[in-house]
Length: 239
Image (cartoon, rainbow, N blue to C red; front, side, top):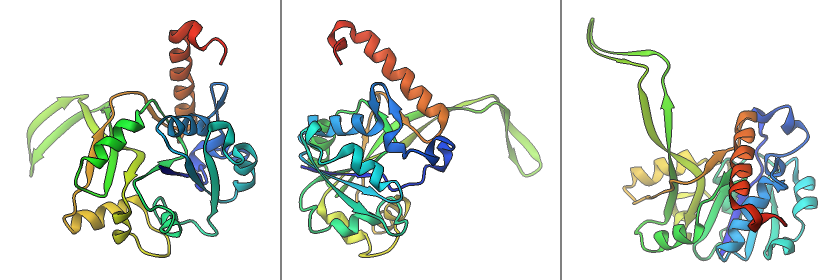
């Protein structure tokens, strides 16, 4: 089993922290964000990991090394130009010859990847998107109108949306919809597959998930991890 961790982004929303550290190496507990990801991949049976890197490549290579401390083999793919969320996979077509995981490098979650893989293998499409419900509170009175007449009103409504976690399971057939070269985003992949009426599988995760894109997100992930560790008590005392 193989996995790709995309760590080539600039992380501008995490400035000024991201001017000196990539998102993958942001501190989380006693390790970093990428430690959490690599632990999860190793637990799910992944043995080969490719990390895509750009300007922070030397730092990430220095920290992660060959992957031996997680029980995996890590290689690196350098992006000479920004290739989007899916574009870097094109250079790995020959290597990714079976089902594989793809993950953003700025994700903290307790997702069970073995269940995702099982779901993917039992589903019809070459792409499985891991989703999670997110509640959005709108702090305004919301008006529904028909032309010049109000037909509905809600005071500070709450909406629940299912969002992409930035974690995917794919089969090699997905490369039929990815161009051989150049930048290509996940939004473009979805558009192409839906336009061609190809099934895209949706796996819903109801556990912990934080997209560490902003400073407040990093703090939230730290709080969740600390709470989890405290709840486990003596079982993690030596970690």
